[in-house]
Image (cartoon, rainbow, N blue to C red; front, top):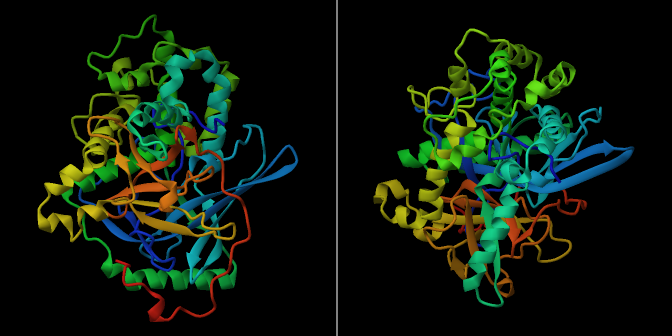
Amino acid sequence: MRPFVGLSSLALSLAGCAAGAIKTPANCPSRFVAEEIQNSMNHGLAGDQLNLNSTLTGIQALRGWMDLTWDADGIRKQKRCAMSLVPDVSDGTKVMIAAANHCLPEVPENSGSVVESKVHVYFRDGYIPISIDIHNLDKVLKMGQLINKFLVPLIPDAQLASWLPDYAASNCTSWTSDFRQGSAQDTKTACFSRTDLRIIDASVIETGTKQLELYKAALTELKRIRGASLADLPNELRLGIQLLWRSTNTEDIRKRNLRAFAYLSNVQYCAATSIPPPESIAKENEIFFVLDGKKMFCNMSAQNRDMFFKLSSTDAEFDRLKAIQNDDKTPLLELRNRHIGCDIPPSGWAEEMSSCQLISPTRGFFTKWVRDGLANFQLLGESERKGLTPDDYFNVVSPSHKSAADVGVHFFRLASNTERVAPAGGYLSAFLFDYLPSKNFFQFQKGDSGSVLNIFSGYPVAVLSTINGEPTSGGATVTPLPEPAEDAPTPSRVSSTCR
């Protein structure tokens, strides 16, 4: 399935779940991340800012499932994936959701089908069904179909590979083959990919009185236990998490792609006989200039080009994109650096970065705090560790498979559950480890791509992509979910293992 292709090598995918301790009881809330960047949503194409004075804190998160329902050729279709939900600090109307890429449906660009979105939030041993609106989901999906239709056929697969949606799975398959040369016979290898991680912005639009009352109760419970969550991260980790989340946010990806495509159809660009190569570019960023010089958007009919931008953007965005396309005054190289870019702007992170500008620092963060995370965690001072131990550093949240009726999402501490972890110096955008299914710690299977790897006891950094090299694409079986209990659980039901 190819729901989306992006100019970024972080091609569109979603991820989802939070973190916790080993086999935490179902009523232990999980920890997640809250990004408190002022006006982080609804910015213009060139106006987004990364506020270095903002604070990322570990907070309790709601968890459960996300269902997407749509019509395709007269057939009603539905997918379900594990997800985690972080409500805003006010009334919880605005939320951030982590869910799996493979929950995204393939909706043709000319389809009028509306994708209905609902989350099922775990609370009191059941699930609250809450209708949500995912910001610009229709535009994200249609952009993906248009890219597949107009661009993918025009570039050799070898060049396109690193920004196709299946890039993460193909890398994990290759890396798993190498990694398993040292694996014990009965183990399986899980590959969690950074390039599969996505965070999406949504709003609660539920109108049911009972559902909203339960949701409000769940938010109240979160606030009651919020004091037990992590304090601010060490500064370097805080900045790195901001970069990682910005690079995996679906709205940011869509806007970055639109700016890049507008440059690639600029009047000066289309009239140029040749496009000078960048003076300095790291090898890992070369993919961002695969399109440069191909003139694909220039060769599109004006009708198709306008259709591409109209279906992928809001009205206000469309006007700004047209301004980029028609800019015949700004020097061409300046336009390229501004909208595709590679060199980090002189102002640092204050301006919204392009995909090319994001990948190097994001990859560096992943390498240091995930691939070599435990070693660097040991170097932190006691105050910076916030009371965590190495056993707390890595956590996985995954659907449970203890029985056919079990629809829970469970927490696992990675320490002591793994047989072998990928060595340092290995994989730049994935985290691999071996596990023994017979120990019943992990029972990964198809549809578990909502499982997330977390660091520092709650910050998602990668999503499950393959098991033994086989993709976990698809969605979980859509089965009825139990409703929450009418009364709040007694204090004795809350395990002391909850942080």
